[in-house]
Length: 398
Image 1 (tube, rainbow, N blue to C red):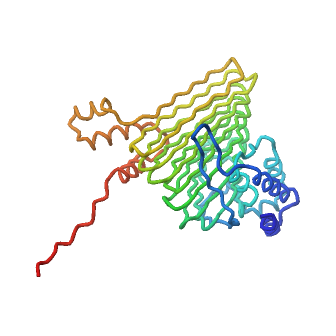
Image 2 (tube, rainbow, N blue to C red; image 1 turned 90 degrees about the vertical axis):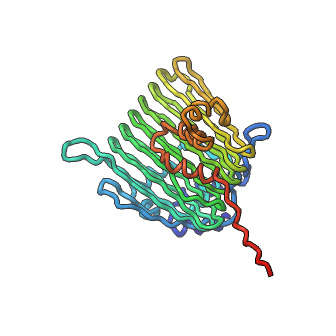
Image 3 (cartoon, rainbow, N blue to C red; image 1 turned 120 degrees about the vertical axis):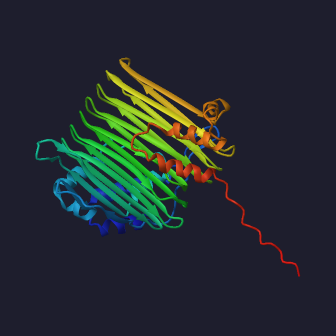
């Protein structure tokens, strides 16, 4: 692996500090487990691979002049960008990976993009929201990093879409760095591929009066691992993390969301809705961490899951780490199935059994911001609808 890393670093003309950064994570990855254990009988997803990484193919939508997009080589040639990148990647605020895939993704990323977002002011003097759509095609083992720097006062909506071919392994780390009074909305989506493995890691460093809203809808995969972390660094920073999970087939989904409150008067919301179908397995974990001494902090997490097949497994693990008194923090969690009492009102209104289930499932996902409800229901209905056997050919009497 070291030779592969050195070749990658040389191809991008990376400075020595960046090569050393890669090597540090290669060494760390060798010592970390491929699969994390979350409790007795609860294991995460193994998306590790020994194959050398290759660069993914990017497709970017049209962008305005307020958005500066750099390839990795271009970014390293911009002195002011390289200073930010070094400070960011070597910062103790950037969480250390706890599993092999997270470390290897940093060690052998084969390409990277840097987006520099400045405030876009309209003719009326108000700041308008800018859009950035990144579509990525992964082949083989694709690993990359996307760094998004959002300057003071800027607003950005970021669409992240990944598609893969065959039994590809896609690893992506996205790092957001927000200055004061910056606001970002992130929407993750992709194409179903029941042979592929996906690993996606989000980290947002959020300054005062800034906000990040994540919406993630995992797509069908052989294995899907995601980590979404917001670190609230400045007063009145806020974040919202939303997951809408349709686990079907024999896919295994390992998802974690965490918020760290380090400043006063910060707010966080973690919301998850999921269904388990087929022989799928879902492990969902949430964490709200409030550091000592913070005041006026408000946090909440709410996870609700429906097991729609007797062979589906769902483990949901919420956690709170509260080290301060002057805070408000709650969590709710339920893992259940569709009960007779849930079907009472749909049947009372004349719905059939299947129509009643559809009403209950639609209600289960309702209220999730920026989630495509119709697409979720399409995927659920596709999994619930039995496949008709092929018509038999009538025999012909001789």
